[in-house]
Length: 333
Image (cartoon, rainbow, N blue to C red; front, top):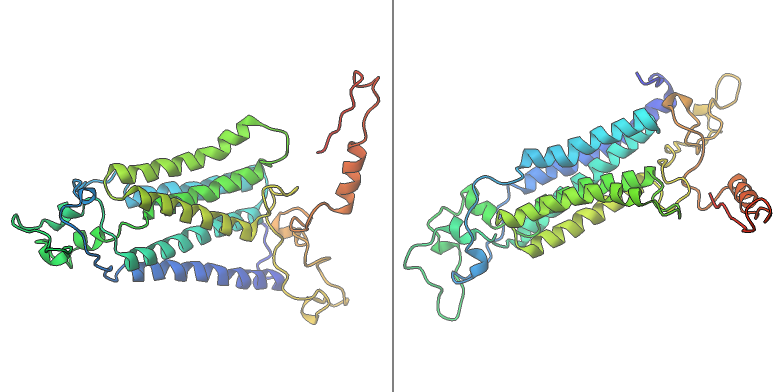
């Protein structure tokens, strides 16, 4: 499958190494579901607070299954199409999907921890609470959940204390934000040539995340502060996760993932064949194992390689005025 030598010792060690990454992603996801079962902090509130008096929307504009489809399944399909149909191969696909899952798992775990500990009421909290008709705030004080007729251990009330930050906003900006970085890297977003279409292609995933975030205020599920902080949290984690597996967008090889991990010196006995030579020329080279279907270079090197510098110097030599209409040109790329 995919031309991978499954019985090769290096391939097995690579799967073991990256398997630990996937295990951590799964653990963080399980932790999220575990934390979500913890009752949130019950923050006090005022029955006269108009920001909590919005109507309870039964059917959300973007339910959880739609959010997963938009921010997880969609980006995975897109990354797969780019990796296998355009460029990259299995190493690019694996790095892209692993980074995406890292971003999403970190986001939902951190978002839920903040939700549980902050316990901010949602804008529709009074509608969820259903206080008695004669309920009023105590003199010189605030009310708490005891004024509510809805049971405090019900899902509606538990969810009513999970306004900050917006999980839909953080999740959408984590998934679609990561996709935007992935697209930007493949297009060489900052190649100093000023292509307008690249700006629009880079912005489309962010626009989708923004629409998801706006829907949360329209459904009266979140205050604007919840959406804003959630978006910042998701976008920050998306960039953090992307940079774990890909170079910066200003790098000359930003379209290529980092090299596969070095799992020991090529001089070690485990990599020596019967002839005493390593079956792989360079552990650091991303294309040292051609069975992975990736190219041979080191995208993680800082700056240009010597060969690239020589090519740039040759290309940057100005042409003669006669050949170029009396104008010297410099082709940097």
